[in-house]
Length: 277
Ligand code: AMP
Ligand code: FE
Ligand code: FE
Ligand code: ZN
Image 1 (cartoon, rainbow, N blue to C red):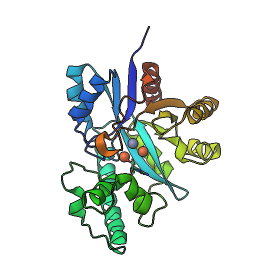
Image 2 (image 1 turned 90 degrees about the horizontal axis):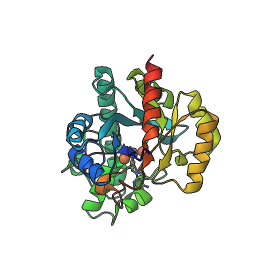
Image 3 (image 1 turned 45 degrees about the vertical axis):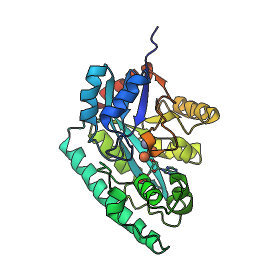
Image 4 (image 1 turned 180 degrees about the horizontal axis):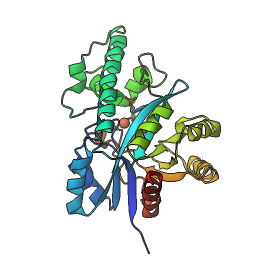
């Protein structure tokens, strides 16, 4: 019997996780995971380190990234699995995104300053290793500097998707994100699909080239999971799942809370291989 399990959604401190790739691998080892995917937002910087640490622990590392896109005014995330993380085209595209992320945070800081909250970009990046700065860094800086009591409050009051200081402006369409992943040899998978309103939204994204759904996720209820399994089956999509662990960046460390059977890794790998033929 094959009881191997995997977590296909993990962040390191190169994006908005709080742990190094080595710490993530060590935690995966303790959680009994046979395979993990490093899915940092808009960067592949942690993958090589994770791979090296994982060899000793006999854990398989799936190279991946999590791209942001604007879908009809909403921010969605698209995971790219089995991307070629050595691709210079991919790396330079991601660098551009990280640059525009910095510009975006600067606009959010400006909006916060209009509400009497004075923080600099250096305050946001202080003590981080991140190459890709996001809202979780901003939330942590707001907390550290005493403007809010928790990261959750920062999102609730200021920088959540409908908050007064939120700025989207990724200027990336789902189609562009999908193309970026496919050109790097990867499989595009819609992350945490509960953020969308309807099956129709998912069908639109399938038309844009999404090949999989992250059915299992730490924010999904059992009913949501069942709903997304049905959609994935109807459209012959690959099924993935993961905890979306950000280390201590979220209210609790999520690794271990979602474990998917290894067969899903095999199917995902086959999908990557057949799309490259
Ligand atoms: P960004 O990519 O900069 O838009 O930030 C997205 C990240 O912010 C997500 O991956 C989460 O880590 C975090 N995030 C978004 N909304 C919330 C929320 N309501 N509470 C806590 N973290 C959140
Ligand atoms: Fe994140
Ligand atoms: Fe996400
Ligand atoms: Zn994530």
